Image (tube, rainbow, N blue to C red; front, top):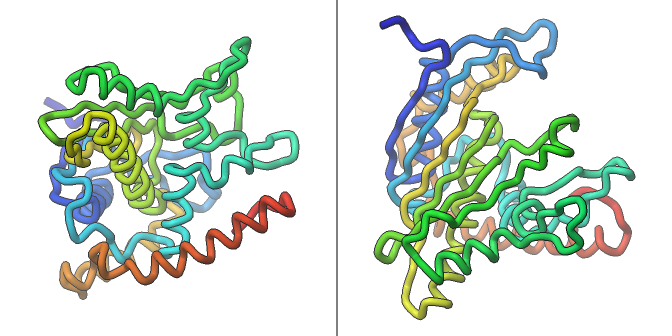
Length: 279
């Protein structure tokens, strides 16, 4: 059999930090070379695979990878955008602001002709409470009447959850995922959403339900050509540092997250007063 046009990678890991590292390495080593719509003229083709990553424990430790591009403040901002909707007020295309947020699409999905937005996350909690084994607890983001024509349509497409015993399993389906620059932040935020759903279902059922297995499924999991030089620096760091030096546990970053929370809260309050967008 000939090689696949688009390689399909299946990986299993114990934590999102381990899963992200394995996934970006697999993309680098196995990825098809293909141009994208975002390439600068002199950039080499991206490397691209289809990914099915399974993390055994969404909150397995060490949970954070130190080498993800970005900082703790950016990571915490993104988590709160997805889980709490702290930047839903940025949605205002007419004013040149955002066209959507994931939280808005999941918690207040708007359909033309229907006055009341649909709280899909609330539906998932209700469905899992009524029948924890249900296969119908899902939420979508895609709006074909709008997303087919916008510059930056939603990458996250669907969330699916089911309860096995005392664990909430979550599958995330993404049409396009920047493996190096975005995927770890996605995994971190989506697993925290998994935690939030599990806590709500647990409260409804009156028994402990914890976030368990997490699957990160991406049709296009890619490293952009313009990021190759930076990625090669990432590869060099893997050679020089032990696993403990490449990762943080949740407890290790707790003081940094607490400091970030204070900064983020001040910024959000200022934004609401001034209407200005930006941290």
